[in-house]
Length: 221
Image (cartoon, rainbow, N blue to C red):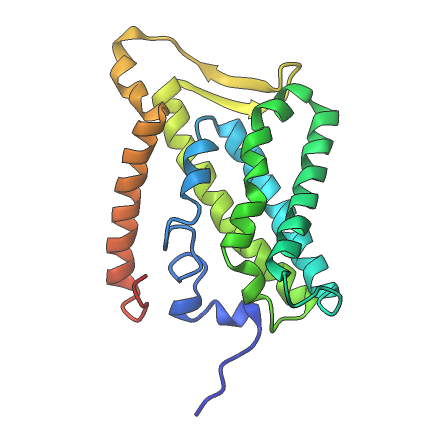
């Protein structure tokens, strides 16, 4: 019997370990559903949240693998949560120095990133990897969720708010374009939380259908 590869990069070639179609995907069990709704009302929020995901995932993975012999076996999840929260706090502090306005607006969203990091099971998937492979896998998983955030925001903000924003400026946000039109008010429902849930439901249904067709070996969750 062929021995399965232990490398995090090679494991992702398997249908069950695929970063987007596999069980670790944010859409596989909607593990990133909360962030997809809260962080995508504006593209600027989604961009900052995506950067925070990469920051927290990669640094937490690096320290977790480097200090694997130091962390206690009991209460390991609590230590991992504290570690991820520490890096999220540093990220918020850096943004507070750069722009206090945008830091206040994204504070709650970025505060949830450590919880999503731990609940995603990323630390368990790093157990058999060395530090380099662990960081590479953490970066890849965070990049998938970040890409989903950006794509979702590119639908919600232009259609729901008739604008497109980026981080910057004295107020924390600059607009690439911003339009006002009373005739398009019904479509702004997409910008609301309920509209985002409906849009997410359609996207999730398409994902599940395409996943069944293209990844038949994947075990349903």
